[in-house]
Image 1 (cartoon, one colour):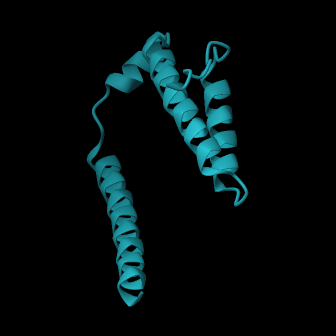
Image 2 (cartoon, one colour; image 1 turned 30 degrees about the vertical axis):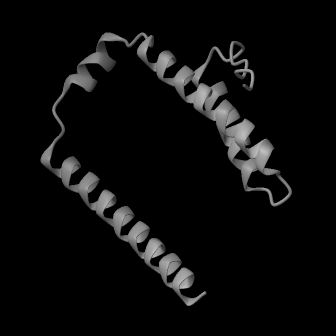
Length: 105
């Protein structure tokens, strides 16, 4: 069984996200082996868990807490729904074109 990645050095959320960006870039490289990609995937999972822990422990100012507690306005909800719908439509189109390419083989 592979050793769990050491993520103890990541104390700030920005450090975690910077490393995740590096991992994404590495995985996208054509010369990255499958084994290396899987190791990077394991590290990304551990970093994601670390990011959640950091967010859970975050200390918010009273103003931030108040802003976070405010209900989402109807306009904001509509904008979020529109953005989600556009993403889902794009994702569905990509899957359909991939399925068509697979069927053509």
